Length: 350
Image 1: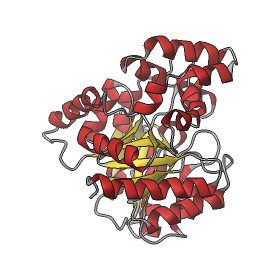
Image 2: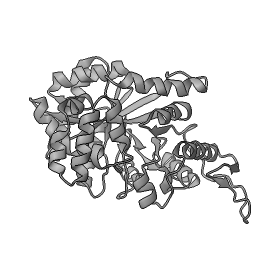
Image 3: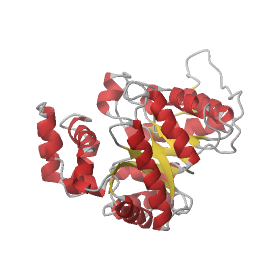
Image 4: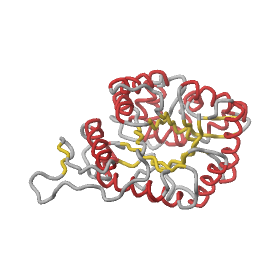
């Protein structure tokens, strides 16, 4: 198992130069990849280009580039550009986002997300292979059948023979799609205790195309808090967990809340959502069970983190994307150092 770094939403939410220090420290300590996210603030490709220009070895990955925010051709252009400018260090993570962002921010209907993703990846792959792109689907048609356009070919040749594609997936059908179409899975709230059910879905998708899980990159984003008392450490993750379980989506459709229900936290997940949507955010944070945070995070001292890393590796994780929490950049840098040392102590590093 390798370690990575997940910076989350970099621009506007933290000190960008502090995050650059984290990225450079991750590179110096041997982490494989740094991931950057986007929602409706800073975009991930700009952040990744900025980080890549100030590093030399660590891979840079989008976690994610939003499918409703770009045409597949634009995504292929961006991926090829980043691949060339980084010397082949780019990893393309994609996701459909959710109804509120897709429809409220991008103005794209959140209909048939699985079929849309399937067509989207097909066009991206065709463009990156530098084939002349002609595609006729339910969601994408290139060129338009009633216009003046003609089939075109990407003029920029990527350095990489194949730019790896990752899919952010939460639900069972999307997990199957990730296994079928992608090179890796970007996971959130990943718990080793629940992983067999999720990986069975991924494996089902791989089997559909005659592949196994060998070579498939399982990449959960895992909150990391170093300290003597795991329960105190968990308090630093409560805001993040409450936001996703309670506020990332509507009462009728919140993929993360639905995941918590499948994980066995149905009653408390409903309570967190009720409190959050009633704007009782502190109460929602307090209602997130310690067990949920502990199963989906790395909390405690070096030895405890080493034990949890062993559990993550044994469950099938191949790249653990650390999301360090702390009151300062120095605390996050220290947490990253402790995690690297814990991986070495665990004996599951690669």
